[in-house]
Length: 130
Image (cartoon, rainbow, N blue to C red; front, side):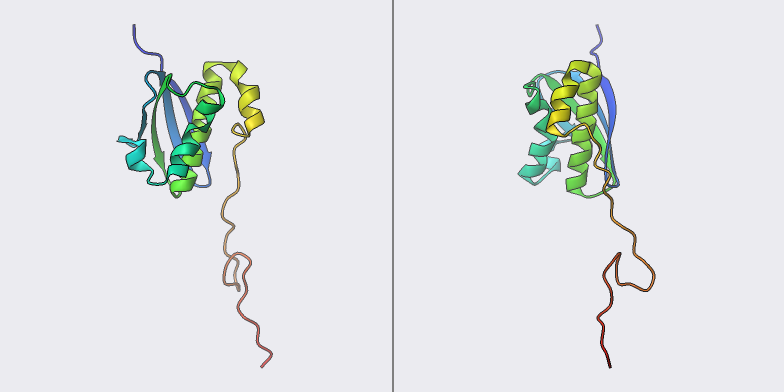
């Protein structure tokens, strides 16, 4: 019998993660590398495990994902969002617990564009009277 894989997409800023979850031993593979080799920071490794820890299923699923765009922190957020959506596909009863933890809602904050005549999005050049 083939293993059942569940697919989902997660997004954060400009990072997009394609996530596949299957029953297994709890391994994380990100862009064909183990999670501890991909994410140098422990906080990023903690972020991607949060949905599984919330449901107490840490060692029950293997996670395989490919992620592009953004920085390391937003890539971790995108993976977390993808894992959350996949867990909700597996069992709809997981949604209230994940929603209460704040993992279901996509964080839509992005960098604001630079405006003409200004140094950045809102920062102005230094004012001088003379």
